Length: 137
Image 1 (cartoon, rainbow, N blue to C red):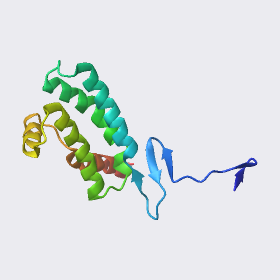
Image 2: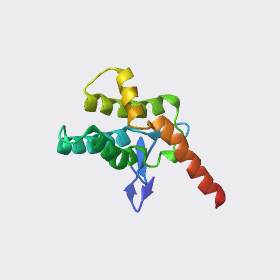
Image 3: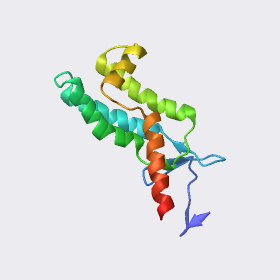
């Protein structure tokens, strides 16, 4: 196919409004770019405040600046359990780095203590808000 005499290139994924749609038999989104963006933002924050700021301050910055980067537009993407688990892993990995432990028991206790919700909890809430707004229109 050509557009104005220029061939249209085939691609395995396309970016539309910040969401990467993947070539598939069914509608499917890629989470790789969102995870990379989260790691980039979280590492920038951690690099600036490092061990100087308290855990509470660091987690507040992550919650307010990095979680939106990770979850942007996922309300419209049909996510399966493994994709949601991979998003949870991103957060757990940051907690591992912040608290310098590999114990999931300690990570879960820290998440509970600091009231830090994982994407597996946040995504259904965001989807419900999104569908409630679209049904009103």
